[in-house]
Length: 86
Image 1 (cartoon, one colour):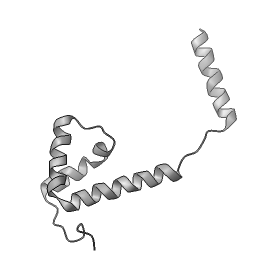
Image 2 (cartoon, helix red, strand yellow; image 1 turned 45 degrees about the vertical axis):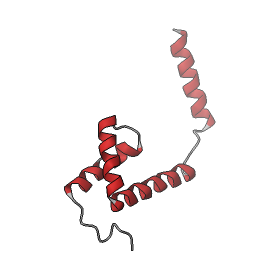
Image 3 (cartoon, rainbow, N blue to C red; image 1 turned 60 degrees about the vertical axis):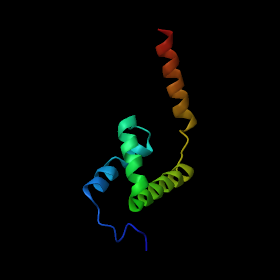
């Protein structure tokens, strides 16, 4: 059983979890990021959630990448060439 399943989520936890995606994407300012890190140091369930979300993102990155078809890449490249030529 994870610590999340029995954890009573405080307002601070809920605020931290709302910022989780921005935190993982590196989109938070230094002050907000510092506050969130401090909360994570003190709150194991939130730290568990960050770990889970980070692992999930890594798995998605590993297994979900598609390459655009060659014809599409060629059309885009030709269009960009036309735009830069004018």
